[in-house]
Image (cartoon, rainbow, N blue to C red; front, side, top):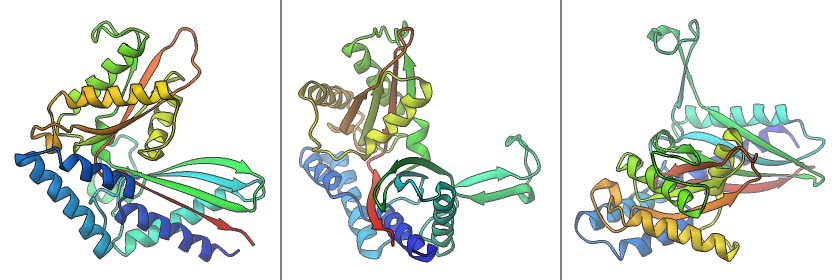
Length: 288
């Protein structure tokens, strides 16, 4: 298969992620809107209208098209570096036609980004790639577009945490999630969605917390985890931050949680906060 077909394949997935809102989250917003009144209800109406306009006109749901996270299953024989080059070309085309915006700055002459001049800056996009090799003759891709605002309000805790009075238990995990949502306030564009990992090290904690955002709202999971996810969401909603940070019953749409192996000395809780505009899409293509 030539690279042009793969570029088109990736562009289609990226366009879908940026412009076609996931139906399971849209249904959750519809359900949420029925419980809100006043300004909170008006904000959710605007969100619903935003989703419809983006889909109809095929324009980005949010002007921040985010950090582009690729989760790829790839044949053993296919070059990872070649895939990266194809992804760069696909995104370059989308930036040039205005579908995506420039989402990174990099100083060309000075590594210190605090002190650069306009003529020394290169603009582009930020990518993350996670590859899994398999013995199928096809490429499967999931894309997550993660905005900078929601990334800013994400965070990680090492338990026990004396400030939060959080121990190494379910209540401690709950307090970590509540702290993230409380500090985010309206800055995370609520109602938000939480991806949470418990365990791992610092790096894997952030990776797997973010990966939880790929999961569907109604995905089947162990009952104990499901109940904990539900309780986290319910307690976050009692904070009353509400849509747009303007107050209301719905601050978090839903939460997704995973547990990772951990070193006995460490107990990390990592929360990847996403705004209501959680943009994910995927697809597969058979190689010939």
